[in-house]
Length: 253
Image (cartoon, rainbow, N blue to C red; front, side, top):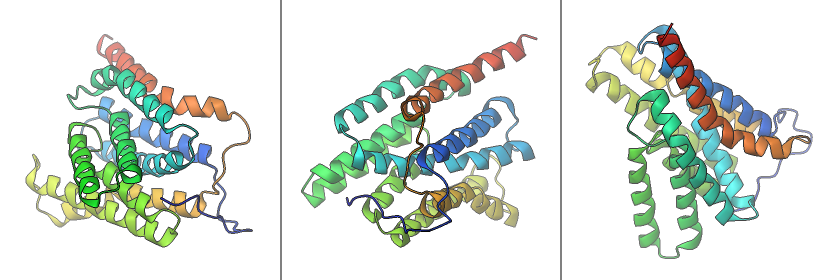
């Protein structure tokens, strides 16, 4: 894994810092979760908000790889992910009613994959451990796609063209799985619209690619860095619990 990508001097396209991008990702995630908690699956508004939320996971994978490279303590980083994965599980299940594990658990698995890539010298053992960790994510939110995206970005890190190709692979995999879900899932929709919508649903991954590879300036916000650092962790379980409480309140009206 190589170091930080160099930002071309005078590149006017790179207008967003890391914290701004993460706040945007938190907002798109919130829209996605509002759809899942309050709206009816299959309606136009639901589908739009759900697809907007696809932006969040690949952005988090990108910053996980970057954070892994530059954290002062990988042990503290991993323990922080583990702690918030535990704290988020009950709010996650209350809000959605899912029996799966939450997204921070998936990010923890992605973190462990990066640890394996960095520290395991045997190519065979490294491949086996990475595959096992990818399979573990089938128990959690954003299964398979998030760890695969993390692996692709990790091996392409520092080369924007290769990273763009990694995003495209993630987009294609995500879209194909969605098309398959439309065709062979509950809807059983074999129309051209199902194919179109399946590939449109992954547009958030392409938006994440443009945001991190074209618009990101490689910097952090000058003010409120410590606040932002903890906000991104605390926001996840907190907003899920608040959505659950609002849902209960609406049901009791």
